[in-house]
Image 1 (cartoon, rainbow, N blue to C red):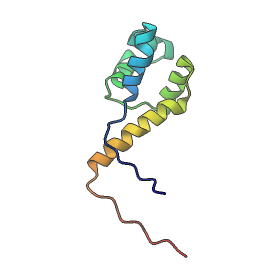
Image 2 (image 1 turned 90 degrees about the vertical axis):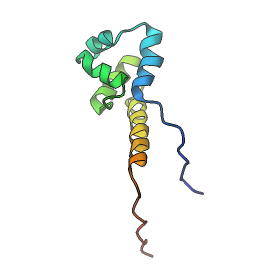
Image 3 (image 1 turned 90 degrees about the horizontal axis):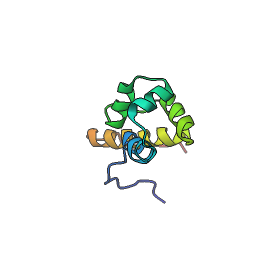
Length: 100
């Protein structure tokens, strides 16, 4: 069975998830979230607008705040990072021969 997937759709950005699934429904502003997690509002704004990645520290804070797991946030970020890397790489190296 092949593990290769055809990637055609851009993964949902963690900031879009944060905005659409959490902040909006809760009626919470970016400033309120920033105050709650103890960071500058610019950090939350950059995540929401896709200009910065969700770090492990922020994933822990978001998970605690919204009763999710840090893996939820980091997996969303990883999907975006891999999608972007695939789009930027012109070619991948050939597989190395495996020892018998």
